[in-house]
Amino acid sequence: MAANNGSDHGSDENTRLYNPYQNFEVPIKSQYLYKLPTSPEFLFTEESLRQRRSWGENLTFYTGTAYLGGSIAGATVGVFTGVKSFESGDTTKLKINRILNSSGQTGRTWGNRIGVIGLIYAGLESGVVAATDRDDVWTSVVAGLGTGAVCRAARGVRSAAVAGALGGLAAGAVVAGKQIVKRYVPI
Image: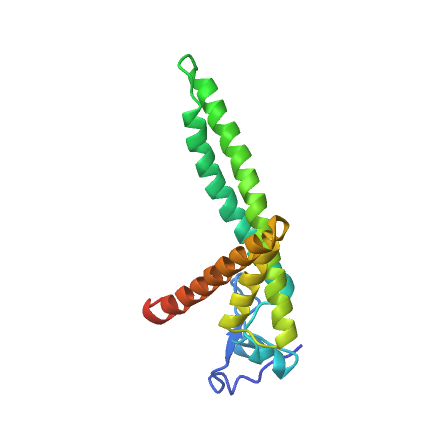
């Protein structure tokens, strides 16, 4: 067991004392407290220099966030569609059924569509980072450009070019907005 001798408790600011028996209300001598680092531990120093999610975490984050956002937006649209489909003789139970069916159908459809867009974006962004070994604004813009082009490629070259330009602009705007929020909003 790693035990400290108790003489250098406050000597290192990058560690914190950990008592594994703190919840058992047992008097423990200070020599049995462990010094744990306060910063994340990395095996190689190159890993500590990169403050970025891995490609798998990136893929999961963008896909899940896009699916959740699309599902919520689609369900909201579905509620309004369900309310518009009311007929004059509908009972309350039938009205609720129409709203639930419509919001479930639309939410599922929108969630799947936007989730796939998040999946393509995450894959392209991770590919660009792996190819260029840089993670900056232009990486996101290129990933947005590629995502827009891939999503509309089946409709022709012109449609793919327009969607790619819009995707690049949207990704650039999101990254610029994120930088503005970091700079001017104290969190």
